[in-house]
Image (cartoon, rainbow, N blue to C red; front, side):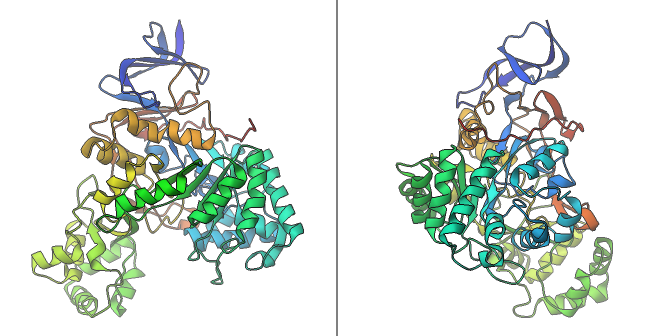
Length: 548
């Protein structure tokens, strides 16, 4: 028998939590047709000897809602083994949307998620009003990965209440209308509903986004429609009380963002608190896989104040590099940068990512910029400039705002109720680069720290998130399942250094980050990535919710 694809001689880690078993895997018509020993040949064969064969990874927190319009390849996540991406997180979506509200929703996404407004308005077709129409438009783009979308609270409030939706309470009639719109959106394919109660997320005029201070009863009324359809609710910034009210209203799955692994003892404390939040309810948390918050460097953001520094920020990268290597300009930069308060970030939380091919995200907590500069006998601004010059301007620094301590994060990640995730792909594109989070899970948490066994680590990247999304045909390797599959070298896989590029509409900047160690990623039976490079295949599907 001739199969479409045979993956030959790998260590199959099926996503259930079981440890690897050596064998082959066959794919036909986009489905897995054999697992174990495959005697027939493949029209395409992937030599998986010495490699792990796993289900494709599932990303539970992206904001690719806009970027997919001009980048259906869905980079960077498509370089890191992701096969399915959840969009529509944090309450901010582009549907439902009346034509008169397009600019408003685009402006909100810019201020909340650092996605350029002009790119959003010019890079998307804006051919929809309801959420189903948005999914239709995405489907026509033929994305390279599978897409799952949620309808956002902000868009729903604007759609029903107009300007009043920003700060005012909804009337009883408006509550019913919002619930109906959410129910209809799910009927048209949305996987559920997302909300945002984080006051720091603002509109362009400085007000908190719609729904931030909504009465929790509003979420309960909406939640009943979500639960009736066996869909999910997602939240950011919600406290335990709100999460419990959402869970009790839906009687189903709740997904929320969590964290706080910073001070000594915080990991265990946050883990114990998470147990209390999740006890007796189907609530799942996700958090960043390492210290994260802001990425700075000569090629991108420079948080140092001064007249000469302001001029430097206006230059191209090539001119910046030339400037810091000019003695007169260098002296002015040092003189201004060493003034008290000139460096606008706490230097004891800023860490150099190294100049090697692979970024060092696991620098010891005591090796921050201030400590490194003291050891070198120089001011930290001099250290910043010196390492920038030594790396030809490519050296980057990581400001750890969230989950500062990897040791504390290890305590939190052992909790059964939390998955490593929260890469925020498509958002904060010129500020951070966490989209390669699953490669870090493989290289650091599993290979270096051995926090999870191979079987358990893969489960937390595959079948665990699939269950949260209600996907029964993906997330494990078994006959009859959709052929979303990774083949990777476990001893080699890792992220590469982030690089700032200007490939968004209008030349807007964003970080990208490639990976190494991925032999292949298969999406619905087509090879999407081979030897760390995308093939150009566009076999992704819009996975519309089906009530079951």
